[in-house]
Length: 439
View (cartoon, rainbow, N blue to C red):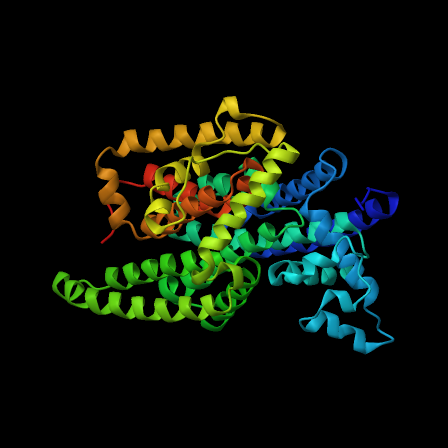
């Protein structure tokens, strides 16, 4: 069932928007006196909410389908099953279960077997009760959740590079496909917000040295959300964060001799902690575990290739591939290229690929501009600037993975959002900060 925008939804939307903006305005008035960057708060909020509504309307009336409605309908089935008069029914919400044991629509019960989909359905079910069952209000709430996470990321980088706050606002909130695909009722909406909270938590603990308990909670909560929805992100985020932390610890040591002495110890400690964390995650990551990567990759290619062939979702190929480590690594340049710089103009098939092609041209032009400005110094800059090194340590590996696994531009436009976010922030820092670089 595809929800339609009716009078009931419109009235609820007005009520929820009034509440969100009422408290948002009060919050801005309080914070703007202390930090001028809060002047961007309402603009960013509006962009995300509008992006979510546009996404919902497009999929309801133009595309007429998508994962967003699968999640909503499954959540509706779950909500209808739960009964406050029969507390035993809540076992379906708070524990793992076999969908065939419950009265779910046969069209959606199969998806509840995946832990990641089951989690987003349960989260949607919670919002379903809050939103009075309205799909469009749920979309607004998801957009708001995503905005809060991204706002924390924006605050973090604006405090580190105060003069670049406007540029950060543009690349974090104003890139059309990033906004659309991270504002609807989707797993991507929640994960991008969680990444923002993770950035905020790590920066407070290891850079600004403040708000210890609040930041620790942000790290735990956001890591939990990411692991439940897209556990493979953890494998790339935590190594990048550890690089950032290690670089900041070194930069606080004035003596070059001590920095050189402590570097091996820091690296060994980080590697040890990283191996422990990733091993622990892998044991519970199911199809995304390190042991299952080959089967998972082949499954992605098969399914996304099928979608491209049967539903005109603009497929692409990286050529013949051997599913070995050497064979996969040989696709690094092509995979990164397709993530950041494709679809090309001649690969446009629909509105989604049109927007993607326009942005790809922008990404390519901005990249060339940065390279021309910095020339050979760019490599030294990347290595010695803590934030740039951190951002690209995630952006390039993740761009490789999503470019390698997506195999159609429809899926790629959603999956690549975190890579695009990190990449654009890094380009802004490289292009606009002075040549003098940190230790």
